[in-house]
Image (cartoon, rainbow, N blue to C red):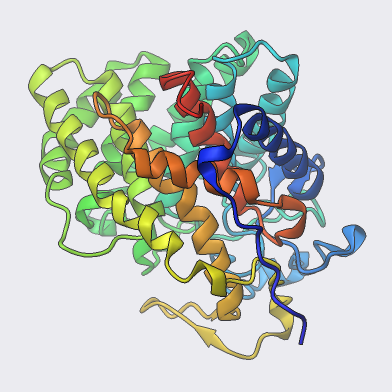
Length: 415
């Protein structure tokens, strides 16, 4: 058995701004070298080999995708979250461009945008956002998406559209894509469909992750956010009227989070949906409701940040996930999908890295609210010590978004 790979202890009070800047550059370089494939324009989820040439051998074949193996969402296949990855990366790039005029940011944003366009168009179904695309043929996609993919996708497109990174041609394409997304959701998100996004072929599904309305409080603003972004980007008042049909109810629900420990990514996606609404809603009373909900999400995330530190010395940051083809143990939600079950060590370090940036990011996104000193320390700590080349999945990349956003809030925050 290989020994555990520990990240070196760091005293965050002694970490210099130069060290953090160097680490951010290191993360950006590793992100593109290890996880980005220019053939599809996508960032893939994890590696199953330290050998560069074989790092993506686990990605499913064209035939396996056609047969919905390992499941119709591609959960566990390494092709499940490319649009979440794209949205978070676009968030980081649009924040970084406010700090520097580095031309690399324009090029990298164009790289990410290429993949986002591909996931909206390669399959030929207008308004459907695929999770990812197979690099085997550059076309094959799993038939089921999710509300999480749409959330980060639309939030990333919206920020890119309003940034200096996008040009006239890209903005026109975003308007086209957002018009198609809104039109499709209006057609399919109905009581008859249980407010659920169908499969790419139009077949009804039973997965709750595709449900867009009558959902949990932290998910309530997802649908109206998409319509709000559609109105803002296309200028079509029809989408504003549709947004307003859901907005007030969604904001009321968002202020009533359950008394429970939410995973940080759920609160981050909640914050993404509210972020769009807060910046676009013209009514002061609704904006105030939105702000209260965003503050609530930030309060909840304080626990997630602390929880990262608990038992950290037991964590193996070098754990390598197995090729899903070799997995014999499966788990699954009530919809019946069989999801390959990976070792605890892999999921443990992934959660710790992920929540170390999601928690401060949720706080930074809350308007008129300061991020807690504890969350700044946590962010500095993980950013300073993470070694992306020695981590087997893409989770460290998310540290870039709160890092750049924090600097935009206060240039002296890491001093």
